[in-house]
Length: 212
Image 1 (cartoon, rainbow, N blue to C red):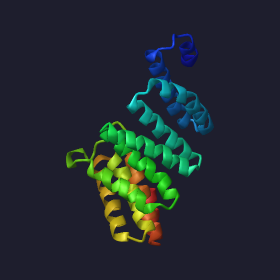
Image 2 (image 1 turned 30 degrees about the vertical axis):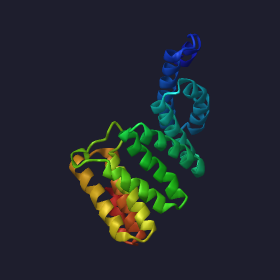
Image 3 (image 1 turned 180 degrees about the vertical axis):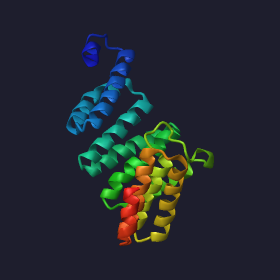
């Protein structure tokens, strides 16, 4: 109904912005329903509005959503390409929060493409953007970005056989969630810890991490 109503509005910057906002919210709802293909269609319809608005932060968020869509549909090269576009805009606009988000968004397709060193470079840079006082902050995200970044660092270092750095990152992530008990952040940290134990063939501890 909201999209139909927007079709009857005059075409100007305000109506375009509302149209983008509604579509971004609809994307979130569709993802939670598992409607990934519909998300792709929705993003395709949103593209012309993004181009017409020409607002850097909005364009960056759109590119981030594109990256996430391609990651979910296993088109990892496109996920990286769109993610890097968003990251470059975030850097140009000095948008620290979006830089944090894009670090772990791009790390996921990098991981799937076995580009572990590239993922580590992004993630380590993102970790440095977070001050000690902000370690437990979610910056408006679903999970604590420091935990998510350290979890992906755990997996990437483990893939490279650097179990010392993998263990350090896993331990840091678990310590952070132990202090906050935030459910989604805890799931990320324990997931990473469990994967590390699997790499080390410590199956008993892996079970304990996954069950926590």
